[in-house]
Amino acid sequence: MDVSMLYRNYARDFHTFYGNALSENTRNINEKGLYVGLKVRPVSRWEVSAYYDQFSFPWLKFQAGTPTEGHDWLVRVAFTPSKTSLLYAQIRNRMKEYDVATAPGRNLPLTAPTQRRSLLLFYDTSPTLILSLRTRLQGTHFREDDGPQRTGYVLAQDASVKIGRRLQLSGRYALFDTDDFDTRQYVFEQDVLYAFSVPALSGQGTRAYAIAEVKFSKHLTLWLRYAETHYRNQTTVGSGLEELQGPRRSEVKVQARYRF
Image 1: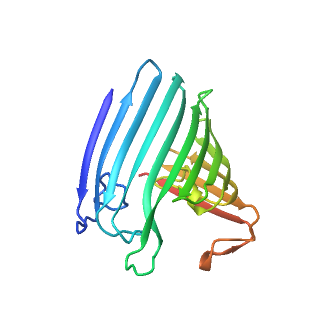
Image 2 (image 1 turned 90 degrees about the vertical axis):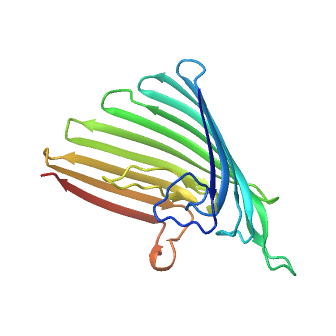
């Protein structure tokens, strides 16, 4: 059994350029909280982990014109059927307060709680030495105050193949469907060396990418990546200077590294 506890108190006028301590905010500022984590291994191949985080923001912040508070908890059950496979399911619930309206006669806006609950099923297996597969199904329920419940989900299938010692191919095909931007889905993607990609999938459509890593010699390595998002029921993608005509957005990356 592993247990962890962490109390944090970042003043509203505390500024750090490179601080990256645990916090609900993006920066370590204007926050108080208590985090408690637990991990239990009751029997062989099984693991149960959970945490609960209670936090508050004593001063104003982005999308909150008054002091607010909230909480975040997660429970995950993992099973390892073999040395080359992993299966887990998790549920996460987060409640935070945001501005909703400004009442007559008030200088400060009214805040209301928003609840975001996420479910995740994940399976990772390597049936052979050269092939690995990953399947992910995740969904989200979002509700603002007493408003209607909105939903979103994504189903993603990954595959990676090693061809000899010089070539590795990886790819993903994903289906997503969300009611709005509040129910958007984030799924980490493989990228070229020293880069990462976590796109926000919102609306309805498909997301696919493929990446090839080629080792020409012990000095020269090449990465090539192509990704495409296809939206349904849309005639344009993006807005402003980034607006594209048509329902597709694609990107190409090429990177080469030469080690002396």
